[in-house]
Image 1 (cartoon, rainbow, N blue to C red):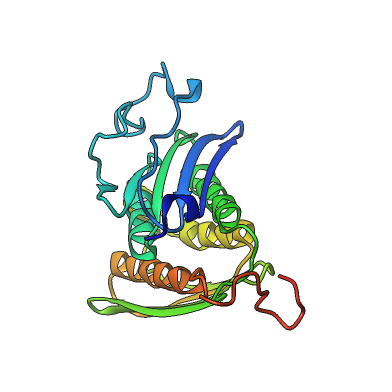
Image 2 (cartoon, rainbow, N blue to C red):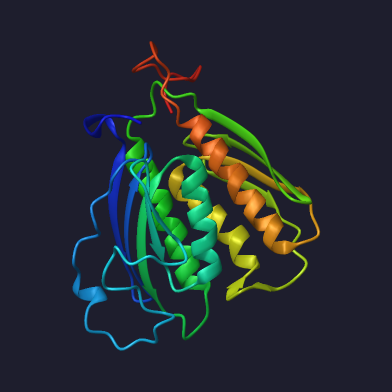
Length: 239
């Protein structure tokens, strides 16, 4: 794990008429402070399923606090939280997210804006795109499902994905929003990403294997190359 001084971190606030999001990210893991107090997350009447716990040490369905990683995620969409948790865990990130979205309408704005905020945090934390491996790729299985992710930190946002989900919903997340959400992340992260589920009968397994493959590809692409600090890994001389 990188020293605290060398960790690549970002704190993002994204507030719209549809969602209120706080997000803290460390690409190199390690401890993260609690998300700051905000009036957007105080004194609201919400159902327990939609409302982030006031105490961020509260163990939830998508939290995992260790010496190496702090992960604490609450968007109000359980399956989305589960996928973000898997992504952070296998990328080696520390990640704290809380979101209050217009779930009385549907899951679209909450999912889209969470991925957009995470993409902004990724590119902010990454900083100058120098001295990086730049390319990352991975296969990840989950039982009968198998996924492939290929990533280029290119500053040329582009996303191609094929998930092949059989059903319209997983939990309270519309399966269409996984493709749209990952594409939104790639746009704000400034990456080229190809993410394909190659096989699998179970939609949960298909989705989770995809996010795990994406996580490992992210970890590889973000690796800092010893001895090549400050070098732009491009024939153009700029990324």
